[in-house]
Length: 301
Image (cartoon, rainbow, N blue to C red; front, side, top):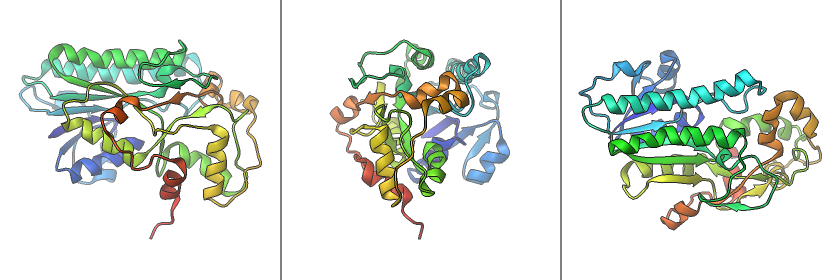
């Protein structure tokens, strides 16, 4: 399949594109930085910087939409929150407009979302895809993002919405945690009883690839491992894998100073369950946290 990918140079995209090549797909990477894409992928992929570089008579078989400003990269001012919205909604709308322009529709559009769809929360409620939501900024952001992608359905395109949890791999959120934990200074965030729903990068990428070619997949899916854990359990497991203590605690007030309203991403959470993936028969390569962290952190040969 010829697969157009937005956000291909991001954390997930950098791992996804080599897997697409392994499956003999033909990636087309849409990026703001051609140099960055070339540095990552060399000549193995086609790189474009504008959707106008795709002619209306070109056959695009699938679209994978991963673009969006980093959700926890900066303090949440009103301007930052608007940038988070714009970077997701505008790109998704542009991709839907591309579909309208193409003479032949793609077979499928896989569009990013997040477990923030369920809102930042303090309860223990397990959340399948039809789980109740808390109507906060993160829910509204994801809901608008998903609604924009679903417009492609009106043109006969199969749409999959991937509500991704914390992705464990080389980079991303784990890379931000590791320095403190390696020094023996890691520990829970705030109370530590907030839920963390996570997924290993290999499962994230494999599920996306599966959705490309399996026509039975459509609608929203929770891309999280079956066993969510509390922040305290995550911290203790990470420290144990690294053979380090887990004594320190990050006060909520520190995160509030750093991230403002965005600190809710860390001091609150969601207990998300991948009901639809499990019912579809997907077998997670890394269903438990110990195995997932051990694989990511094992020494390179």
